[in-house]
Length: 240
Ligand SMILES: [Cu+2]
Image (cartoon, rainbow, N blue to C red):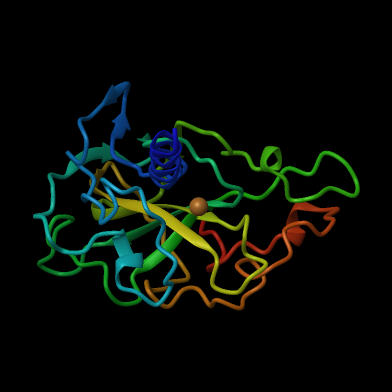
């Protein structure tokens, strides 16, 4: 019986570590869901699903550790919607963010590293506030429990090769500094039929976030009255 309990505890621990976290393995475009990591760089946690805590790590850039070759690049039109499946479900409270970075001279989506101040934010989510005072509870987050997330490529984005970076930041235990959990991935896109937009401002990964900023180090149980009172990490969103 004791062995059985020990086994049960071991299994429960394993189950919590893997199933309670999440990855973004498949790209979705025009109704097609591509196989795991066909157009998405295989992430460091693709088996463990483990969160990244260290916001100073280069892994934060694309959640990769450089051990596997980069994948293929999918051609999409500016203005198209693309999606990511969620391996597992988004089972923590927190914002969902999307960033893009354009390939530089003589680079492609497959060859670019994403280093330097090349990233601009194209979307972020805030908590819904349905009552006053509201708390930062699970159901307040638009993507809580999501199995897919979607983003529209800005219609005015110039034609070119890009990385599209999806990120979910879990803040359910962020009342202790450094206990934010980062999950994410980068898709490789060739954007065609683009426009004349000028993305701004730029940021870099690592570097965009500070462990003591209000969106990453906060009492998640304090009352909120406006969505804006949650300060989403990173730069403001660029829109066309
Ligand atoms: Cu977690």
